[in-house]
Length: 76
Image (tube, rainbow, N blue to C red):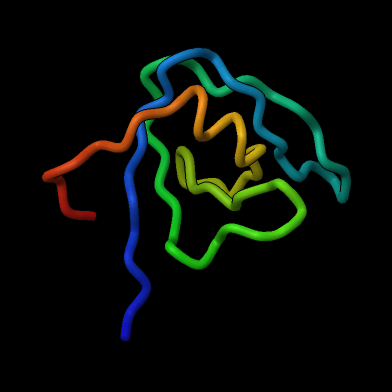
């Protein structure tokens, strides 16, 4: 069964971790940004792998819950 993808809209500027030159650097995802996640990208460390602007970044799961809303009715 293929992974299901979910789309979310960031409602408030939110920190995400980008990998740059082997290090994780914090950047802000702007309000209105659309991100996608795969159903199996949640992990026990408190982070979720997110796709944004053709980049794979990490967000805190709690930030996703507090600062994003699921976009429904749009297929990916």
